[in-house]
Image 1 (cartoon, rainbow, N blue to C red):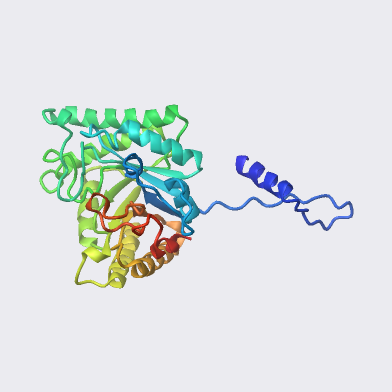
Image 2 (image 1 turned 30 degrees about the vertical axis):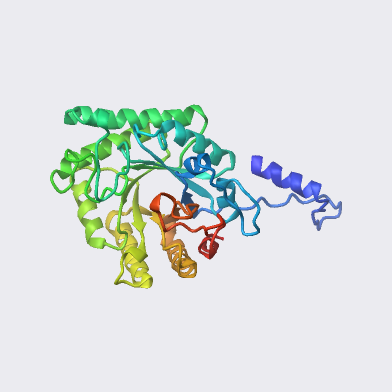
Amino acid sequence: MKLRNIYLAAVIALGITACSDNDNDTPVTPEVPVVEKFAKGADVSWLTQMEKQGMKFYNVNGRQTEGMQLMQELGMNAIRLRVWVNPADGWCNAGDMLVKAIRANELGLRLMIDFHYSDSWADPAKQDKPAAWASLTFDELKTAVATHTTQVLTLLKTHNITPEWVQVGNETGNGMLWSDGKASENMAQYAALNNAGYDAVKAVFPSAKVIVHLQNGHNNNLFRWLFDGLKNNGGKWDVIGMSLYPNLLADTPWKTTNDNCVTNIEDMISRYNSEVMICEVGYDVSDPLTAKAFLSDLIGRTKAIANDKCLGVFYWEPQAYNSWNGYNMGAFDTNGQPTAAMDAFK
């Protein structure tokens, strides 16, 4: 209704007369634009930290623009935000995440929350427990996962913010919360920790889709191994999440990586009757035209997958520029303006 009222107000303000084919010339109510179902998003979790250090963002015409608003102007309709348990510097804790979630919500952007269940980065190389959880028993660890998940999501709920998707773990190709939840050592315990997060999400937001997110979306063997393991141990998920960074695969053309990723997506849909989301993509910032080609191909092909089973594509920290935190796969140039790579989302 809010969108409809805004649209009608714009029609009136512009002095547009609706066409009519009836005898009384009764104005015809204009149609409200359809909101795109396919998610085109960005993880902008660094945004508040970058702003604090004086980083600014500009559109292609050089006009300074707030980061999330700029993402929206560039064609994105969703935002992804990570959560750490007790980070040393405070960035990406629950409070910092909330600040960004409020801003996204006010712009009408859809929201994905990414739980790392760590005080810092959780990824294929490390899945460290939060310091406060280090000495917990396994049963206590499951409770800690559930409690943390509940507290963070309840914080969103009290601010009338409803995430559409929630990740329980980040790039958990070998489980999480090592060593208790290391999948290669104890798949059953990883499944139990995963389910503690899943159940907590559903208790706060029953309609939110829970994502289990793995690295290397081109690697079908990895995905079959992990999701077969979860399935055989009662693991729960709604969406299979993938990361894809083709320029990190030095000997493989990006087109081949995309081919392998799309094949993997189709296999995940068929094998597990699961929806799929590309939760992270990135490409070398120094080659924006190739990045645009890679993204345009990936978005086009995943969007065309039958029955809308692939839900969307998220770029990881596209607003990062000038090697922010050593990251060189953003999609902004040295002046803080979007490169041609971002055109793929329009």
